[in-house]
Image (tube, rainbow, N blue to C red; front, top):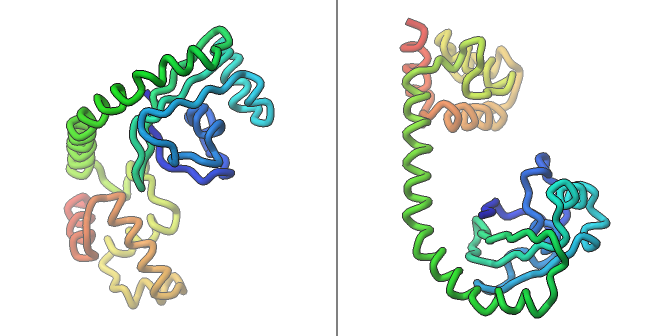
Length: 202
């Protein structure tokens, strides 16, 4: 099963090996197909994309069928089937004949699958928030250098005005950094962040 965020048609991924073949084969009309529709692509169709072509060769694939399961404003779900031999249009049509059934089954499963996944992510985030110090050497929340600097100043008890003065940055820039810190650390305000950093420092 391949599930990935909506991508811009010609925007290369920083992790191309994690993109599905559908992201290239359907880059110009990604997400516009109806649920249950099928797109057949062959090895030669990826000639203009060395990354995808290499991925096909490494996997020993000659053809790929992408079956659209679900699409909305935030995500696109495909069932991607790889074949070690050239698939004909007739064979692809046979798969499309059961496409709507597969898409319907997927739609019924999506809520529970994503709810379970969201719960797991939230549990992990909660666990991390309880156990990890945002300012530790390991940088567990992947704060940028500036976010780390801002968080350190907050931990030292500096006010917004003093942080602006010390870092010589504008209010909007500081706000942007704080929003980034809040999202990564799991707090929603400067006061919460200050309490969190104070607790971790004790």
